[in-house]
Length: 116
Image (cartoon, rainbow, N blue to C red; front, top):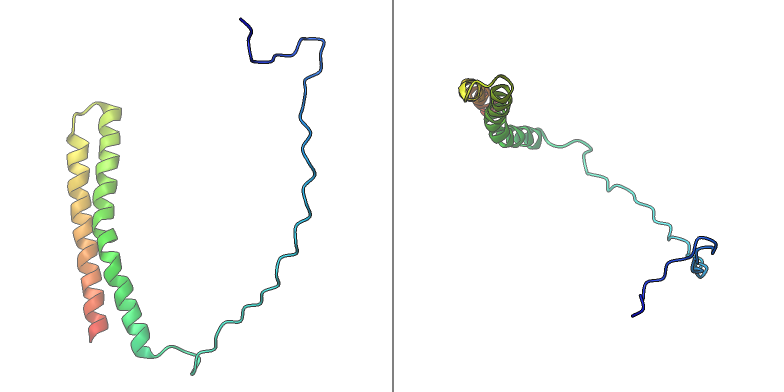
């Protein structure tokens, strides 16, 4: 029975297949972009106020969930490091909830100020 795999002998140079030359690539097209000009130059004050309110509204989820998740992860790490069961996870998750609610109240106050 013969082995179909080829292995070079120690005194024979390894066979490297020749790669055909790469054809020349065409030049990329020249493209120029010019930003369209807005009439008036500046966005209206109503648009600016609405854009700020929308960005604050979108940040509510992150500012509420972020501290809770961060507190739980740091608490889990501390529990594993000191072998305290789930004590640090519980404490830091609760502190994250408080911090998230405080941040939520701050954002709600900013939204109310923008609405006036």
